[in-house]
Amino acid sequence: MSIVKDNKDKDKGVLPEVLTNIDLDNYDKNEKNTADINAGPNHKGNVLFTVAIFFLMSDFFERFGYYTATGSLYTFFTRNLGLSSILATQMQSIFQSLVYVVPLVGAYMADTLMGRYLVIVVFYTLYFGGVAVMSISAYPSINISALFFVGLLLGTATGSGCIKPNLIVLGADQFRDDDPKQAKQKSQYFQYFYWMTNIAAFIAFAFMSKLATEGVGAIPLELSFFSSFIIAAGSILLAGLAFILGSSKYYKPKPQGSALSVFCQVCFAAAKKQKYGAVVLIGFLMQFVSFIVTIVSFFVTAPAVGYVAAALSVVGILILVIMTNTKWLEAAKVSNGGSFSEKQTDDARDVVRMFPYAAFAIMFWCVYNQMNTNFQSQGCQMGNRVFGDVTMAPSQLNTFNCLTIVILIPIVDKVLYPLMEKTRFPLTMLKRVGLGLFFTNLAVLLAGFIEIARKAAPSTGEISVCSACDGVDCDGAIYTNEMNLLIQIPQYMLVGVGEIFAAITYYDLFYSEVPESMRAVCQALNMLTTSLGTMVGGTINSVTVMWLPDDLNTGHQEYTYFLTFGLGMINLIGFIFVSRGFEYKADAISNDSDDSDDKLQATDFVSGIDNNSIGKN
Image (cartoon, rainbow, N blue to C red):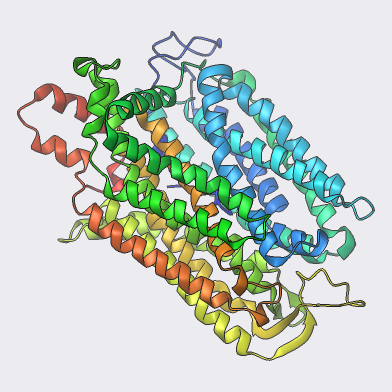
Protein backbone atom coordinates (compact mmCIF):
# COMPACT_ATOMS: atom_id res chain seq x y z
CA MET A 1 0.00 0.00 0.00
CA SER A 2 1.02 3.57 -0.30
CA ILE A 3 0.13 6.99 0.67
CA VAL A 4 1.55 10.20 -0.67
CA LYS A 5 3.61 11.88 1.88
CA ASP A 6 2.63 15.53 1.38
CA ASN A 7 0.40 16.32 3.16
CA LYS A 8 3.65 16.91 5.14
CA ASP A 9 0.72 16.45 2.17
CA LYS A 10 1.02 14.56 3.27
CA ASP A 11 1.53 13.72 -0.17
CA LYS A 12 2.14 10.99 1.82
CA GLY A 13 1.20 8.54 -0.47
CA VAL A 14 -0.60 6.90 -3.27
CA LEU A 15 -2.26 3.55 -2.84
CA PRO A 16 -1.19 0.78 -5.23
CA GLU A 17 -4.72 -0.46 -5.69
CA VAL A 18 -5.78 2.93 -6.98
CA LEU A 19 -4.08 2.31 -10.27
CA THR A 20 -3.94 -1.44 -10.71
CA ASN A 21 -6.42 -1.55 -13.57
CA ILE A 22 -5.06 0.84 -16.19
CA ASP A 23 -7.23 1.19 -19.28
CA LEU A 24 -5.16 0.31 -22.31
CA ASP A 25 -7.93 0.24 -24.91
CA ASN A 26 -7.18 3.65 -26.37
CA TYR A 27 -3.42 3.89 -26.04
CA ASP A 28 -1.57 4.85 -29.18
CA LYS A 29 1.44 3.30 -30.79
CA ASN A 30 3.95 6.08 -30.23
CA GLU A 31 7.19 4.25 -29.44
CA LYS A 32 9.08 1.45 -31.17
CA ASN A 33 8.77 -0.69 -28.03
CA THR A 34 4.96 -0.44 -27.93
CA ALA A 35 2.45 -2.67 -29.64
CA ASP A 36 -0.69 -1.76 -31.55
CA ILE A 37 -3.32 0.67 -30.33
CA ASN A 38 -5.26 -1.95 -28.38
CA ALA A 39 -2.27 -3.73 -26.83
CA GLY A 40 -0.53 -0.84 -25.06
CA PRO A 41 3.09 -1.27 -23.98
CA ASN A 42 5.12 -4.20 -25.21
CA HIS A 43 8.16 -4.20 -22.94
CA LYS A 44 10.09 -7.42 -22.59
CA GLY A 45 11.76 -8.93 -19.55
CA ASN A 46 11.55 -7.42 -16.07
CA VAL A 47 9.80 -4.10 -16.64
CA LEU A 48 10.18 -3.14 -12.99
CA PHE A 49 13.97 -3.01 -13.15
CA THR A 50 14.45 -2.02 -16.79
CA VAL A 51 11.82 0.74 -17.15
CA ALA A 52 9.93 1.51 -13.94
CA ILE A 53 13.19 1.90 -12.02
CA PHE A 54 13.55 5.38 -13.57
CA PHE A 55 10.21 6.43 -12.10
CA LEU A 56 11.23 5.11 -8.68
CA MET A 57 14.52 7.01 -8.80
CA SER A 58 12.72 10.16 -9.87
CA ASP A 59 10.20 9.79 -7.06
CA PHE A 60 12.93 9.37 -4.44
CA PHE A 61 14.85 12.49 -5.47
CA GLU A 62 11.65 14.52 -5.92
CA ARG A 63 10.27 13.62 -2.48
CA PHE A 64 13.63 14.22 -0.81
CA GLY A 65 13.86 17.63 -2.47
CA TYR A 66 10.27 18.48 -1.60
CA TYR A 67 10.57 17.71 2.11
CA THR A 68 14.00 19.29 2.34
CA ALA A 69 12.60 22.51 0.87
CA THR A 70 9.30 22.58 2.77
CA GLY A 71 9.75 20.52 5.95
CA SER A 72 10.72 23.51 8.11
CA LEU A 73 8.78 26.29 6.43
CA TYR A 74 7.10 27.35 9.68
CA THR A 75 10.48 28.15 11.24
CA PHE A 76 11.66 29.97 8.11
CA PHE A 77 8.48 32.05 8.05
CA THR A 78 8.79 33.12 11.69
CA ARG A 79 12.56 33.43 12.07
CA ASN A 80 13.79 34.54 8.65
CA LEU A 81 10.77 36.36 7.23
CA GLY A 82 9.51 37.70 10.55
CA LEU A 83 5.93 36.47 10.16
CA SER A 84 3.77 36.11 13.24
CA SER A 85 3.07 32.62 14.53
CA ILE A 86 -0.52 32.63 13.31
CA LEU A 87 0.36 34.06 9.87
CA ALA A 88 3.12 31.47 9.50
CA THR A 89 0.67 28.61 10.07
CA GLN A 90 -1.80 30.22 7.67
CA MET A 91 0.79 30.61 4.90
CA GLN A 92 1.74 26.99 5.46
CA SER A 93 -1.94 26.10 4.98
CA ILE A 94 -2.12 28.08 1.74
CA PHE A 95 0.94 26.30 0.39
CA GLN A 96 -0.31 22.83 1.33
CA SER A 97 -3.74 23.58 -0.13
CA LEU A 98 -2.26 24.72 -3.42
CA VAL A 99 -0.15 21.54 -3.63
CA TYR A 100 -3.37 19.50 -3.52
CA VAL A 101 -5.48 21.69 -5.79
CA VAL A 102 -3.14 21.91 -8.77
CA PRO A 103 -3.08 18.11 -9.33
CA LEU A 104 -6.50 18.66 -10.89
CA VAL A 105 -4.82 20.98 -13.39
CA GLY A 106 -1.96 18.54 -14.00
CA ALA A 107 -4.30 15.63 -14.59
CA TYR A 108 -6.54 17.66 -16.90
CA MET A 109 -3.58 18.91 -18.97
CA ALA A 110 -2.23 15.37 -19.29
CA ASP A 111 -5.60 13.92 -20.30
CA THR A 112 -6.61 16.59 -22.81
CA LEU A 113 -3.59 18.58 -24.00
CA MET A 114 -0.04 17.38 -23.47
CA GLY A 115 0.03 13.78 -22.30
CA ARG A 116 1.61 12.65 -19.03
CA TYR A 117 5.22 12.55 -20.22
CA LEU A 118 5.34 16.14 -21.47
CA VAL A 119 3.48 17.46 -18.41
CA ILE A 120 6.08 15.86 -16.15
CA VAL A 121 9.02 17.30 -18.11
CA VAL A 122 7.53 20.82 -18.28
CA PHE A 123 6.59 20.97 -14.63
CA TYR A 124 9.88 19.51 -13.42
CA THR A 125 11.46 22.52 -15.12
CA LEU A 126 9.07 24.88 -13.33
CA TYR A 127 9.60 22.98 -10.08
CA PHE A 128 13.38 23.34 -10.23
CA GLY A 129 13.05 27.03 -11.06
CA GLY A 130 10.75 27.56 -8.08
CA VAL A 131 13.15 25.98 -5.57
CA ALA A 132 16.06 27.87 -7.14
CA VAL A 133 14.21 31.17 -6.65
CA MET A 134 13.51 30.18 -3.02
CA SER A 135 17.25 29.60 -2.58
CA ILE A 136 18.25 32.96 -4.02
CA SER A 137 15.66 34.87 -2.00
CA ALA A 138 16.78 33.13 1.23
CA TYR A 139 20.40 34.32 0.94
CA PRO A 140 21.00 36.60 3.95
CA SER A 141 22.03 39.68 1.96
CA ILE A 142 18.96 39.32 -0.30
CA ASN A 143 16.16 37.88 1.89
CA ILE A 144 13.24 39.15 -0.24
CA SER A 145 9.93 37.80 1.07
CA ALA A 146 7.93 38.51 -2.09
CA LEU A 147 10.47 36.71 -4.26
CA PHE A 148 10.45 33.74 -1.90
CA PHE A 149 6.69 33.35 -2.10
CA VAL A 150 6.79 33.55 -5.90
CA GLY A 151 9.20 30.61 -5.91
CA LEU A 152 7.25 28.72 -3.27
CA LEU A 153 3.71 29.11 -4.60
CA LEU A 154 4.11 29.54 -8.36
CA GLY A 155 7.12 27.29 -8.81
CA THR A 156 7.37 24.67 -6.07
CA ALA A 157 3.68 24.12 -5.25
CA THR A 158 2.54 24.23 -8.88
CA GLY A 159 5.39 22.08 -10.16
CA SER A 160 5.10 19.46 -7.45
CA GLY A 161 1.31 19.32 -7.66
CA CYS A 162 1.14 18.91 -11.42
CA ILE A 163 3.78 16.17 -11.39
CA LYS A 164 2.08 14.30 -8.55
CA PRO A 165 -0.87 12.67 -10.38
CA ASN A 166 1.16 11.89 -13.49
CA LEU A 167 4.47 10.35 -12.39
CA ILE A 168 3.05 7.30 -10.65
CA VAL A 169 0.37 6.78 -13.32
CA LEU A 170 2.81 6.93 -16.24
CA GLY A 171 4.99 4.44 -14.40
CA ALA A 172 2.01 2.10 -14.09
CA ASP A 173 1.29 2.57 -17.80
CA GLN A 174 4.50 0.67 -18.58
CA PHE A 175 3.03 -2.66 -17.43
CA ARG A 176 0.55 -4.87 -19.27
CA ASP A 177 -2.44 -6.09 -17.31
CA ASP A 178 -2.93 -9.16 -19.54
CA ASP A 179 0.58 -10.44 -18.74
CA PRO A 180 0.54 -12.19 -15.31
CA LYS A 181 4.24 -11.53 -14.72
CA GLN A 182 3.93 -7.84 -15.50
CA ALA A 183 0.75 -7.55 -13.45
CA LYS A 184 2.69 -8.88 -10.46
CA GLN A 185 5.57 -6.52 -11.20
CA LYS A 186 3.14 -3.61 -11.30
CA SER A 187 1.93 -4.48 -7.80
CA GLN A 188 5.57 -4.51 -6.68
CA TYR A 189 6.09 -1.18 -8.43
CA PHE A 190 3.47 0.50 -6.25
CA GLN A 191 5.00 -1.01 -3.13
CA TYR A 192 8.46 0.24 -4.09
CA PHE A 193 7.04 3.64 -5.01
CA TYR A 194 5.57 3.88 -1.53
CA TRP A 195 8.80 2.90 0.15
CA MET A 196 10.79 5.42 -1.89
CA THR A 197 8.38 8.17 -0.88
CA ASN A 198 8.58 7.41 2.82
CA ILE A 199 12.31 6.69 2.93
CA ALA A 200 12.95 10.03 1.23
CA ALA A 201 10.63 11.78 3.70
CA PHE A 202 12.33 10.09 6.65
CA ILE A 203 15.82 11.14 5.54
CA ALA A 204 14.70 14.70 4.84
CA PHE A 205 12.97 15.16 8.20
CA ALA A 206 15.63 13.32 10.20
CA PHE A 207 18.66 15.17 8.82
CA MET A 208 17.78 18.09 6.56
CA SER A 209 15.37 19.71 9.02
CA LYS A 210 18.22 20.09 11.50
CA LEU A 211 20.46 21.60 8.82
CA ALA A 212 17.72 24.06 7.86
CA THR A 213 16.89 25.25 11.37
CA GLU A 214 20.25 25.10 13.16
CA GLY A 215 23.05 24.68 10.62
CA VAL A 216 25.43 21.73 10.65
CA GLY A 217 29.24 21.57 10.66
CA ALA A 218 30.74 24.23 8.41
CA ILE A 219 27.28 25.60 7.53
CA PRO A 220 26.49 28.43 9.99
CA LEU A 221 23.00 29.29 11.22
CA GLU A 222 22.71 32.36 8.97
CA LEU A 223 23.22 30.16 5.87
CA SER A 224 21.23 27.16 7.09
CA PHE A 225 18.02 27.67 5.12
CA PHE A 226 19.87 28.92 2.05
CA SER A 227 21.98 25.76 2.08
CA SER A 228 18.98 23.45 2.56
CA PHE A 229 17.14 25.10 -0.35
CA ILE A 230 20.22 24.70 -2.57
CA ILE A 231 20.36 21.00 -1.71
CA ALA A 232 16.62 20.70 -2.42
CA ALA A 233 17.04 22.36 -5.83
CA GLY A 234 19.84 19.93 -6.67
CA SER A 235 17.65 17.00 -5.67
CA ILE A 236 14.79 18.22 -7.88
CA LEU A 237 17.25 18.55 -10.76
CA LEU A 238 18.36 14.95 -10.19
CA ALA A 239 14.72 13.85 -10.11
CA GLY A 240 14.09 15.42 -13.51
CA LEU A 241 17.28 13.96 -14.97
CA ALA A 242 16.47 10.49 -13.62
CA PHE A 243 13.07 10.68 -15.30
CA ILE A 244 14.44 11.89 -18.65
CA LEU A 245 17.25 9.33 -18.55
CA GLY A 246 14.84 6.50 -19.26
CA SER A 247 12.56 8.37 -21.67
CA SER A 248 13.61 6.34 -24.72
CA LYS A 249 12.21 3.24 -23.01
CA TYR A 250 8.84 4.68 -22.02
CA TYR A 251 5.44 3.88 -23.46
CA LYS A 252 3.80 7.32 -23.74
CA PRO A 253 0.02 7.23 -24.21
CA LYS A 254 -1.42 10.25 -25.94
CA PRO A 255 -4.17 12.40 -24.35
CA GLN A 256 -7.65 10.93 -24.86
CA GLY A 257 -9.88 13.55 -23.22
CA SER A 258 -11.02 14.08 -19.65
CA ALA A 259 -13.97 12.34 -17.97
CA LEU A 260 -14.05 15.22 -15.48
CA SER A 261 -15.58 17.61 -18.01
CA VAL A 262 -18.31 15.08 -18.92
CA PHE A 263 -19.10 14.54 -15.24
CA CYS A 264 -19.45 18.29 -14.64
CA GLN A 265 -21.69 18.69 -17.69
CA VAL A 266 -23.99 15.89 -16.51
CA CYS A 267 -24.27 17.41 -13.02
CA PHE A 268 -24.99 20.94 -14.19
CA ALA A 269 -27.48 19.78 -16.83
CA ALA A 270 -29.44 17.78 -14.23
CA ALA A 271 -29.23 20.55 -11.62
CA LYS A 272 -30.89 22.98 -14.02
CA LYS A 273 -33.97 20.75 -14.00
CA GLN A 274 -33.93 19.54 -10.39
CA LYS A 275 -33.84 21.92 -7.40
CA TYR A 276 -32.61 19.10 -5.20
CA GLY A 277 -29.56 18.69 -7.42
CA ALA A 278 -28.99 22.44 -7.47
CA VAL A 279 -28.81 22.44 -3.67
CA VAL A 280 -26.31 19.56 -3.71
CA LEU A 281 -24.06 21.42 -6.13
CA ILE A 282 -24.39 24.59 -4.08
CA GLY A 283 -23.19 22.63 -1.04
CA PHE A 284 -20.21 21.39 -3.02
CA LEU A 285 -19.40 24.85 -4.38
CA MET A 286 -19.64 26.33 -0.89
CA GLN A 287 -16.39 24.53 -0.09
CA PHE A 288 -14.61 26.44 -2.85
CA VAL A 289 -16.08 29.76 -1.72
CA SER A 290 -15.02 28.94 1.84
CA PHE A 291 -11.55 28.17 0.50
CA ILE A 292 -11.26 31.66 -1.00
CA VAL A 293 -12.79 33.44 2.00
CA THR A 294 -10.41 31.59 4.32
CA ILE A 295 -7.41 32.89 2.39
CA VAL A 296 -8.84 36.43 2.63
CA SER A 297 -9.27 35.97 6.39
CA PHE A 298 -5.54 35.38 6.73
CA PHE A 299 -4.78 38.93 5.63
CA VAL A 300 -7.57 41.00 7.20
CA THR A 301 -8.14 41.78 10.85
CA ALA A 302 -11.94 41.52 10.84
CA PRO A 303 -12.88 38.33 12.76
CA ALA A 304 -16.19 38.21 10.88
CA VAL A 305 -14.38 37.05 7.72
CA GLY A 306 -13.16 33.94 9.50
CA TYR A 307 -16.64 33.25 10.84
CA VAL A 308 -18.10 33.54 7.32
CA ALA A 309 -15.54 31.05 5.99
CA ALA A 310 -16.34 28.63 8.82
CA ALA A 311 -20.09 28.97 8.27
CA LEU A 312 -19.78 28.34 4.54
CA SER A 313 -17.72 25.23 5.11
CA VAL A 314 -20.02 23.81 7.80
CA VAL A 315 -23.22 24.46 5.82
CA GLY A 316 -21.69 23.00 2.66
CA ILE A 317 -20.56 19.85 4.47
CA LEU A 318 -23.99 19.42 6.09
CA ILE A 319 -25.70 19.65 2.68
CA LEU A 320 -23.41 16.98 1.21
CA VAL A 321 -23.87 14.70 4.22
CA ILE A 322 -27.66 15.04 4.46
CA MET A 323 -28.70 15.15 0.79
CA THR A 324 -27.49 11.72 -0.32
CA ASN A 325 -30.20 10.91 -2.91
CA THR A 326 -28.74 10.77 -6.44
CA LYS A 327 -31.94 10.28 -8.44
CA TRP A 328 -31.93 13.94 -9.49
CA LEU A 329 -29.20 13.08 -12.02
CA GLU A 330 -31.75 11.02 -13.99
CA ALA A 331 -32.94 14.32 -15.48
CA ALA A 332 -29.78 14.45 -17.60
CA LYS A 333 -30.62 11.26 -19.50
CA VAL A 334 -31.71 11.38 -23.12
CA SER A 335 -34.77 9.31 -22.19
CA ASN A 336 -35.82 12.10 -19.82
CA GLY A 337 -35.22 14.96 -22.24
CA GLY A 338 -31.56 15.41 -21.41
CA SER A 339 -28.44 15.15 -23.56
CA PHE A 340 -26.51 12.30 -21.94
CA SER A 341 -26.55 8.54 -22.29
CA GLU A 342 -27.65 6.06 -19.66
CA LYS A 343 -24.06 5.10 -18.93
CA GLN A 344 -22.81 8.69 -18.59
CA THR A 345 -25.61 9.50 -16.17
CA ASP A 346 -25.25 6.31 -14.15
CA ASP A 347 -21.51 6.87 -13.89
CA ALA A 348 -22.12 10.38 -12.58
CA ARG A 349 -24.56 8.99 -10.00
CA ASP A 350 -21.90 6.63 -8.71
CA VAL A 351 -19.54 9.56 -8.22
CA VAL A 352 -22.11 11.83 -6.55
CA ARG A 353 -23.01 9.11 -4.04
CA MET A 354 -19.43 9.46 -2.79
CA PHE A 355 -19.89 13.17 -1.96
CA PRO A 356 -20.85 12.54 1.70
CA TYR A 357 -17.69 10.52 2.26
CA ALA A 358 -15.60 13.22 0.61
CA ALA A 359 -17.17 15.67 3.06
CA PHE A 360 -16.19 13.49 6.02
CA ALA A 361 -12.61 13.29 4.69
CA ILE A 362 -12.26 17.08 4.91
CA MET A 363 -12.15 17.01 8.72
CA PHE A 364 -9.67 14.12 8.66
CA TRP A 365 -7.21 16.17 6.59
CA CYS A 366 -7.85 19.20 8.81
CA VAL A 367 -6.58 17.18 11.78
CA TYR A 368 -3.74 15.68 9.75
CA ASN A 369 -2.39 19.10 8.83
CA GLN A 370 -1.89 19.95 12.50
CA MET A 371 1.50 18.25 12.09
CA ASN A 372 2.60 21.00 9.72
CA THR A 373 1.14 23.91 11.70
CA ASN A 374 0.07 23.84 15.36
CA PHE A 375 2.12 20.79 16.36
CA GLN A 376 5.24 22.59 15.14
CA SER A 377 4.43 25.89 16.85
CA GLN A 378 3.86 23.90 20.06
CA GLY A 379 7.22 22.15 19.62
CA CYS A 380 8.93 25.48 19.06
CA GLN A 381 8.34 26.38 22.72
CA MET A 382 9.56 23.08 24.16
CA GLY A 383 13.06 22.05 25.14
CA ASN A 384 14.78 20.57 22.10
CA ARG A 385 17.83 18.89 23.67
CA VAL A 386 17.29 15.17 23.27
CA PHE A 387 20.67 13.58 24.13
CA GLY A 388 23.12 15.78 25.99
CA ASP A 389 23.84 18.72 23.71
CA VAL A 390 22.20 17.04 20.70
CA THR A 391 19.17 19.06 19.64
CA MET A 392 16.16 18.30 17.46
CA ALA A 393 14.11 20.70 15.33
CA PRO A 394 10.31 20.57 15.85
CA SER A 395 9.76 19.54 12.23
CA GLN A 396 12.01 16.51 12.72
CA LEU A 397 9.27 14.83 14.75
CA ASN A 398 7.58 14.08 11.44
CA THR A 399 10.09 11.23 11.19
CA PHE A 400 8.10 9.34 13.82
CA ASN A 401 4.99 9.72 11.71
CA CYS A 402 6.90 8.25 8.74
CA LEU A 403 8.30 5.37 10.80
CA THR A 404 4.87 4.52 12.18
CA ILE A 405 3.48 4.17 8.68
CA VAL A 406 6.46 2.24 7.28
CA ILE A 407 6.45 -0.25 10.15
CA LEU A 408 2.72 -0.73 10.69
CA ILE A 409 1.38 -0.95 7.13
CA PRO A 410 2.79 -4.46 6.47
CA ILE A 411 1.52 -5.60 9.88
CA VAL A 412 -1.94 -4.15 9.37
CA ASP A 413 -2.22 -5.40 5.79
CA LYS A 414 -0.79 -8.89 6.28
CA VAL A 415 -1.81 -9.66 9.86
CA LEU A 416 -4.61 -7.48 11.24
CA TYR A 417 -6.91 -7.38 8.19
CA PRO A 418 -6.67 -11.13 7.41
CA LEU A 419 -7.15 -11.94 11.11
CA MET A 420 -10.28 -9.80 11.31
CA GLU A 421 -11.59 -11.47 8.16
CA LYS A 422 -11.74 -14.72 10.08
CA THR A 423 -13.93 -13.22 12.79
CA ARG A 424 -17.52 -12.01 12.76
CA PHE A 425 -16.26 -8.43 12.57
CA PRO A 426 -14.23 -7.97 9.37
CA LEU A 427 -12.80 -4.49 8.87
CA THR A 428 -14.67 -3.28 5.80
CA MET A 429 -13.42 -0.14 4.08
CA LEU A 430 -15.76 2.20 5.93
CA LYS A 431 -14.94 0.60 9.28
CA ARG A 432 -11.28 1.27 8.57
CA VAL A 433 -12.02 4.90 7.75
CA GLY A 434 -13.95 5.23 11.00
CA LEU A 435 -10.94 3.88 12.93
CA GLY A 436 -8.70 6.36 11.14
CA LEU A 437 -10.95 9.28 12.08
CA PHE A 438 -10.95 8.11 15.69
CA PHE A 439 -7.15 7.84 15.99
CA THR A 440 -6.51 11.27 14.44
CA ASN A 441 -9.05 12.79 16.82
CA LEU A 442 -7.13 11.23 19.72
CA ALA A 443 -3.97 12.92 18.41
CA VAL A 444 -5.34 16.46 18.80
CA LEU A 445 -6.93 15.61 22.14
CA LEU A 446 -3.54 14.43 23.41
CA ALA A 447 -1.92 17.57 21.98
CA GLY A 448 -4.35 19.68 24.00
CA PHE A 449 -3.45 18.01 27.29
CA ILE A 450 0.26 18.23 26.46
CA GLU A 451 -0.14 21.97 25.80
CA ILE A 452 -1.66 22.45 29.26
CA ALA A 453 1.28 20.60 30.82
CA ARG A 454 3.80 22.49 28.68
CA LYS A 455 2.58 25.89 29.87
CA ALA A 456 2.75 24.70 33.46
CA ALA A 457 6.41 23.76 33.09
CA PRO A 458 9.00 26.40 34.07
CA SER A 459 10.85 28.40 31.44
CA THR A 460 14.32 27.29 30.33
CA GLY A 461 15.40 30.87 29.77
CA GLU A 462 16.46 29.88 26.25
CA ILE A 463 15.13 31.59 23.16
CA SER A 464 13.10 29.37 20.83
CA VAL A 465 14.80 28.19 17.65
CA CYS A 466 11.70 29.47 15.83
CA SER A 467 11.98 32.98 17.24
CA ALA A 468 12.99 35.90 15.05
CA CYS A 469 14.97 37.29 18.01
CA ASP A 470 18.73 37.39 17.47
CA GLY A 471 19.59 36.94 21.15
CA VAL A 472 20.85 40.49 21.62
CA ASP A 473 18.03 42.95 21.01
CA CYS A 474 15.09 40.81 22.01
CA ASP A 475 11.93 42.77 22.50
CA GLY A 476 9.14 40.22 22.65
CA ALA A 477 11.51 37.25 22.61
CA ILE A 478 9.85 33.82 22.74
CA TYR A 479 11.30 31.35 25.23
CA THR A 480 11.04 27.60 25.57
CA ASN A 481 9.65 25.66 28.52
CA GLU A 482 11.40 22.76 30.22
CA MET A 483 9.06 20.10 28.82
CA ASN A 484 10.97 18.23 26.12
CA LEU A 485 9.48 18.12 22.62
CA LEU A 486 9.95 14.33 22.49
CA ILE A 487 6.71 14.11 24.46
CA GLN A 488 4.98 15.05 21.18
CA ILE A 489 5.99 11.75 19.56
CA PRO A 490 2.73 9.91 20.46
CA GLN A 491 0.55 12.55 18.77
CA TYR A 492 2.56 12.26 15.55
CA MET A 493 2.31 8.47 15.74
CA LEU A 494 -1.46 8.57 16.32
CA VAL A 495 -1.86 10.64 13.16
CA GLY A 496 0.21 8.01 11.33
CA VAL A 497 -2.07 5.23 12.57
CA GLY A 498 -5.05 7.29 11.43
CA GLU A 499 -3.54 7.62 7.96
CA ILE A 500 -3.04 3.85 7.68
CA PHE A 501 -6.72 3.22 8.33
CA ALA A 502 -8.33 6.27 6.71
CA ALA A 503 -6.07 7.91 4.10
CA ILE A 504 -5.05 4.69 2.34
CA THR A 505 -8.57 3.27 2.51
CA TYR A 506 -10.01 6.42 0.98
CA TYR A 507 -7.97 5.72 -2.15
CA ASP A 508 -9.49 2.23 -2.20
CA LEU A 509 -13.00 3.53 -1.60
CA PHE A 510 -12.87 6.19 -4.29
CA TYR A 511 -11.49 3.64 -6.75
CA SER A 512 -13.49 0.47 -6.19
CA GLU A 513 -16.94 1.99 -5.69
CA VAL A 514 -17.23 3.83 -9.02
CA PRO A 515 -17.15 2.74 -12.68
CA GLU A 516 -13.79 2.57 -14.36
CA SER A 517 -14.49 5.60 -16.55
CA MET A 518 -14.98 7.79 -13.48
CA ARG A 519 -12.09 6.64 -11.33
CA ALA A 520 -9.92 9.60 -12.30
CA VAL A 521 -12.75 11.95 -11.32
CA CYS A 522 -13.05 10.34 -7.90
CA GLN A 523 -9.32 10.38 -7.26
CA ALA A 524 -9.32 14.09 -8.13
CA LEU A 525 -12.19 14.55 -5.71
CA ASN A 526 -10.30 12.58 -3.07
CA MET A 527 -7.18 14.72 -3.45
CA LEU A 528 -9.30 17.86 -3.34
CA THR A 529 -10.50 16.95 0.16
CA THR A 530 -6.88 17.20 1.33
CA SER A 531 -6.72 20.81 0.17
CA LEU A 532 -10.13 21.66 1.61
CA GLY A 533 -9.22 20.04 4.93
CA THR A 534 -6.03 22.07 5.11
CA MET A 535 -8.01 25.25 4.62
CA VAL A 536 -10.57 24.22 7.27
CA GLY A 537 -7.63 23.98 9.66
CA GLY A 538 -6.62 27.47 8.60
CA THR A 539 -10.18 28.67 9.19
CA ILE A 540 -10.16 27.24 12.71
CA ASN A 541 -6.90 29.09 13.41
CA SER A 542 -8.39 32.32 12.05
CA VAL A 543 -11.50 31.99 14.20
CA THR A 544 -9.43 31.16 17.31
CA VAL A 545 -6.67 33.70 16.67
CA MET A 546 -7.24 35.18 20.15
CA TRP A 547 -5.96 31.89 21.60
CA LEU A 548 -2.88 31.70 19.37
CA PRO A 549 -0.47 34.59 20.09
CA ASP A 550 3.15 34.43 18.99
CA ASP A 551 4.09 33.44 22.55
CA LEU A 552 1.88 30.45 23.28
CA ASN A 553 2.60 30.82 27.00
CA THR A 554 0.27 33.81 27.00
CA GLY A 555 -2.44 32.10 24.95
CA HIS A 556 -4.62 29.01 24.96
CA GLN A 557 -3.60 26.78 22.07
CA GLU A 558 -5.16 23.89 23.98
CA TYR A 559 -8.59 25.43 23.34
CA THR A 560 -7.94 25.24 19.60
CA TYR A 561 -6.97 21.58 19.96
CA PHE A 562 -10.07 20.79 22.01
CA LEU A 563 -12.31 22.60 19.51
CA THR A 564 -10.73 20.61 16.67
CA PHE A 565 -11.24 17.41 18.66
CA GLY A 566 -14.91 18.26 19.22
CA LEU A 567 -15.49 18.94 15.54
CA GLY A 568 -13.67 15.74 14.68
CA MET A 569 -15.87 13.68 17.00
CA ILE A 570 -19.03 15.24 15.54
CA ASN A 571 -17.65 14.34 12.12
CA LEU A 572 -17.02 10.75 13.27
CA ILE A 573 -20.52 10.37 14.71
CA GLY A 574 -22.03 11.66 11.47
CA PHE A 575 -19.83 9.29 9.49
CA ILE A 576 -20.98 6.28 11.53
CA PHE A 577 -24.63 7.26 11.08
CA VAL A 578 -24.44 7.84 7.31
CA SER A 579 -22.19 4.88 6.49
CA ARG A 580 -24.62 2.33 7.97
CA GLY A 581 -26.68 2.48 4.77
CA PHE A 582 -23.77 2.19 2.35
CA GLU A 583 -23.90 -0.76 -0.06
CA TYR A 584 -20.60 -1.92 -1.53
CA LYS A 585 -20.40 -2.71 -5.22
CA ALA A 586 -19.32 -6.27 -4.48
CA ASP A 587 -22.41 -6.79 -2.31
CA ALA A 588 -24.65 -5.35 -4.99
CA ILE A 589 -23.18 -7.79 -7.51
CA SER A 590 -23.83 -10.82 -5.32
CA ASN A 591 -27.42 -9.72 -4.70
CA ASP A 592 -28.22 -8.98 -8.32
CA SER A 593 -28.80 -12.42 -9.83
CA ASP A 594 -31.63 -11.42 -12.16
CA ASP A 595 -29.84 -9.01 -14.45
CA SER A 596 -26.95 -10.89 -16.04
CA ASP A 597 -25.79 -7.93 -18.13
CA ASP A 598 -25.50 -5.70 -15.09
CA LYS A 599 -23.83 -8.49 -13.19
CA LEU A 600 -21.28 -9.01 -15.94
CA GLN A 601 -20.54 -5.31 -16.10
CA ALA A 602 -20.03 -5.09 -12.34
CA THR A 603 -17.89 -8.20 -12.31
CA ASP A 604 -15.62 -6.67 -14.94
CA PHE A 605 -15.48 -3.55 -12.80
CA VAL A 606 -14.13 -5.24 -9.71
CA SER A 607 -11.87 -7.71 -11.48
CA GLY A 608 -8.80 -5.56 -10.96
CA ILE A 609 -9.22 -5.02 -7.24
CA ASP A 610 -6.70 -6.70 -4.95
CA ASN A 611 -8.83 -8.30 -2.22
CA ASN A 612 -5.80 -9.00 -0.09
CA SER A 613 -5.29 -5.29 0.25
CA ILE A 614 -8.81 -3.93 0.54
CA GLY A 615 -10.57 -6.78 2.29
CA LYS A 616 -13.73 -8.64 1.39
CA ASN A 617 -16.34 -5.99 1.57
